[in-house]
Image 1: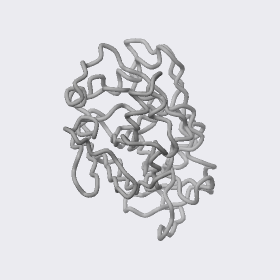
Image 2 (image 1 turned 30 degrees about the horizontal axis):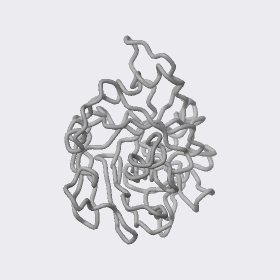
Image 3 (image 1 turned 180 degrees about the vertical axis):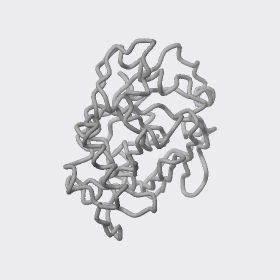
Length: 285
């Protein structure tokens, strides 16, 4: 299923995109697309049955904003330097274990919302990423457990980053990762059964129409399954938590000088195969 949330910011309603590309209203069946729904197999079954029976009313998509596909996000766990080609382009050694940092849930905006270049920024960068959405509580997953059984679905994430804040201003990476609007998410949360193997997805990103990133999740240093298992050793993953799993090569940080960091007026578009497409105009904060 392709689940999404539509409407004005803070007042989104749950919806579904059916196999014919028609937007369907879910508000008569569920309150929201969130961790509580993803953990409720019976509720998901009702949504699926109603969709297959053609019982869901159509929504007019004309002028309708697409919000983040997940409400009430618990935490956003991010994995740094998780692609071999990205590590090479930035001159970094591939990490021996996954690098973990966090983004606050309030950085999340819709896939086509405006993204703000922070005040004083000179190194705002782009990063297309596969987002993993947790559907079952995961703690201390054992080697013989299937970590993907704890995944509800996947989405496109844009891990916007300010590199000077991240690297040159002291402390951890969080300064450059948690600026306002720095995590567009969506358009859809695609359930895991529809995605198949998460290591066979293509990722692309364009800046002002120029292709900058063209990668595949097959380049990940740590697979989605290994990331979920690993993270569960250090924290509990709850339904509605999100893991951003890293970005492939092609970011501004890895480009030759002068590096083409983002400015107000730039337009970024990104997509992951089967998960949809985003488009953001950048404006000065």
